[in-house]
Length: 261
Image 1 (cartoon, one colour):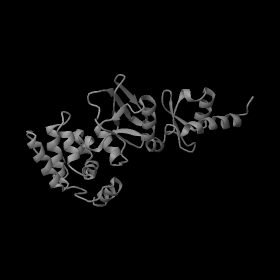
Image 2 (cartoon, rainbow, N blue to C red):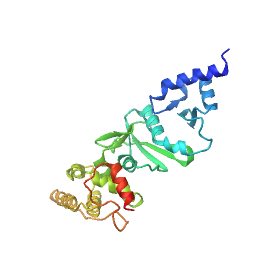
Image 3 (cartoon, rainbow, N blue to C red):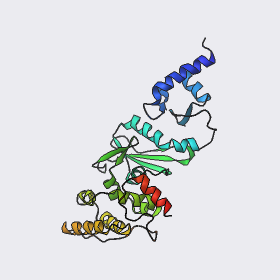
Image 4 (cartoon, rainbow, N blue to C red):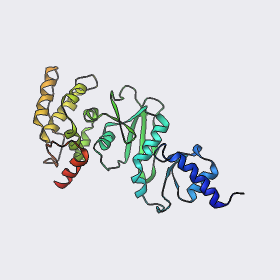
């Protein structure tokens, strides 16, 4: 009979082989029950939802949310990749967080898939994931950030909810300043997936952050396409925290925004 330390060593070897595959996300079937039990008992695995675990540090205190929030996106990446491969996409509001390299963790993340039914995944500390199928409204162009499938930056801005400009103005400002050419937005706004209301919001938002030339081009081009666009500033903050900048790195822009208040 193997000694306890030999059992732990065997379980750790199995864990090491799996650790790099899906950002440390382990499904119960990946290891034996004996290995799973000892790894959980010794603190090397933390249960997240039934049948799913996340690699953890034994030094983490039970009930400490710090480790969970530090690994939130890693868990989501591993879980969604294992379930759907690349046949899913975070919605625009969640995509905004990843594009702008925010450390913010939303209470709920919305995920659009091409298969399955609607479900809500309840996660630790009050977080959740809403998963629903919608082939018609999947983005035309997906991109990958930190192992997660997102709307492209232009589609993120075109599909961003009006509320996002109010509740997360810093992220929205950074995203607007990451756009290299208004044509990236117009190619979406002028299609059937586009929105006249979104065009008005983006024109107003661009003018607010100091990119009046982008705002004018959006309005002018949409009117050439026979769209009646009404410009509106979607922000509630009185002045931008960043304003127009030549910087395109979301990391540097976030620092500039924080320094300016």
